[in-house]
Amino acid sequence: MALEIRIYTLSTCSHCKAAKEFLNECGASYDCIELDLLAGEERVDRLNEVIRYNPSISFPTILVGDEVIVGFQEQRLREVLEL
Image (spheres, rainbow, N blue to C red):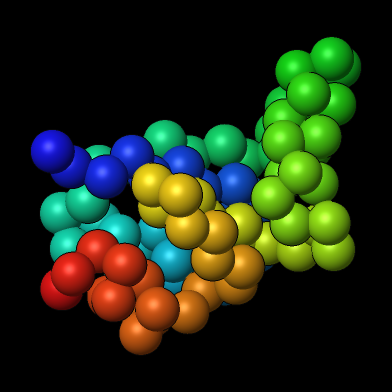
């Protein structure tokens, strides 16, 4: 069974863009939430999700199964995705 991947990003973040490009190149299926493009209660709810996993609120915040990866850490992603 494939790992569930969720990535919280900002649309203007270069590290977020690099992380998404890496996941795309790997053929990984993921759910991407660009917080700065959300509004109202949905934005608040998603921001609270980020805070739960990453209290420093930095981006990207990547969830791979039960693992939380803060920032674009290519080697760590390779390990978790078993690439």
